[in-house]
Length: 140
Image 1 (cartoon, one colour):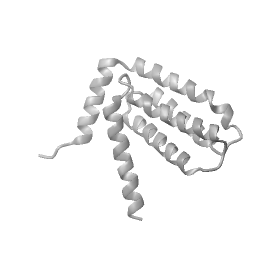
Image 2 (image 1 turned 180 degrees about the vertical axis):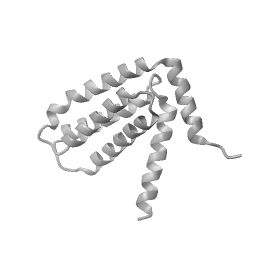
Image 3 (image 1 turned 30 degrees about the horizontal axis):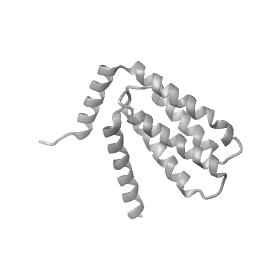
Image 4 (image 1 turned 30 degrees about the vertical axis):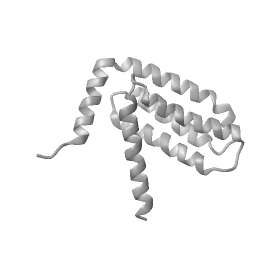
């Protein structure tokens, strides 16, 4: 008998959503969206503005579909990719780069919130995504 890992995760996430309610998750996503929007002023003339706008779009997508685990995974992947992109950029104002990094960290911390998906799920997904990136890079 084959163990269906994805089905097990989906069932546990749905149970979690029923237990805590989607309304709390919407409030958490609203807060992180507002926090990131506050930083937009610093990115107006920066090439990082498109990446920040994309991050905010993913947050809004997840906020509007809190029961969709795929939307949460896409947000997590976007946050990890954004952090990696930010680490590779060496030019730019140090304060702007720190805000860029912090914006992506806030998203990951939000996903770790027990009212959202919790630290265990988030850490597992980040590790899984990072392993996928490593394999893709090695096998080119």
